[in-house]
Image (cartoon, rainbow, N blue to C red; front, side, top):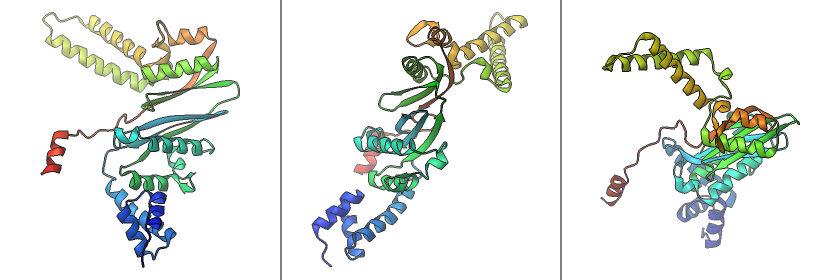
Length: 296
């Protein structure tokens, strides 16, 4: 049967697929638009699966707050070009708006939430085909606070880093300032009290071996008691860098975060920070080699 250009355009607008694919889908399904959409989705599943081996290390981190509930999540794509695209940003916002209305607390359960009348995992598969890049809903956390606690959030550089904090008392400005500090300084723990004994012993062992190796290569080896003091000093320095309360406050390095919070009549209950692509091994691209391959 003859397929009109108008029908092809309608299918393309609906699915984002290429013109030739849309026409082929309509021909195979006798002009039935809904069946053509399904046919393209089935075809798209195959295409999306081929993209599964690609590394999705770019993207956006986002925070949404609604009353006593907040969410923080990361959606990944393959390239910075897509991450900065308005359609991708709109997708992140749409996902956030849907998830903040649910009670889902972890990544796995969030993938079953409906976004645009589709399960999130199905929507991402569909968008993978449309956009042409692997999309991964990588990390998600929902946090609830009490009525007297305060949320603070901050999103840096269009979503490259997002942070969420819960303060006991204080005010919204203080909470946002702490969220900004967390984004900038990347603490791992709130205080030394939160660090496990196992972690401390591990770090102490590593630093001791490091100091002993340095000492063995030194022209003037230090006595054992000095080595021990060196290790303790380095250990304390490490803890100061990774514990939020002991870090120099980013807006006033002359005081630490603990003293800043005290001056504002606040204390911290918890925090969460996401940096896009952290802990993902990114594939190193040789641009010149890629151009050579495409032109040969």
